[in-house]
Length: 127
Image (tube, rainbow, N blue to C red; front, side):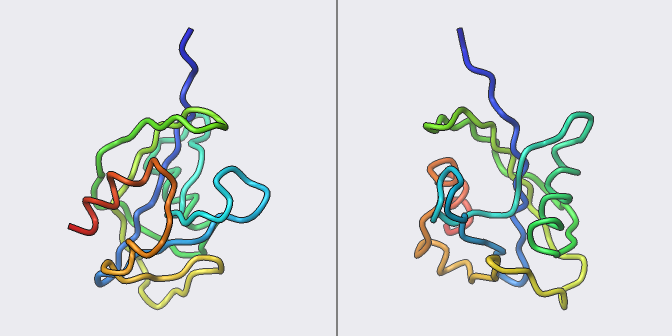
């Protein structure tokens, strides 16, 4: 019997070659790793809307979705997730993100340790 995947919407926010990332807090799965803003898609919510909502809740940055990267299904110790990555940009470039989120240049993304499910996306972003 196969385990059901949890659908996660992720906002890959880019602004002038910089990406919005934050470090996962202690006490949660994958603590200490870096991530793009995102979270679970709620019932009756599109993945695109979830990416916008989660980004605003986590970072205070309003975004618009401009595209989508390849989806990835990843098995972790805490369960299976289906990761939908959306290419996004801020609607107000003057809006500063809330901690722990910060802007990181594309050429520095490889210095940060991300969860396994982000590896293919990071290859796309840094090539």
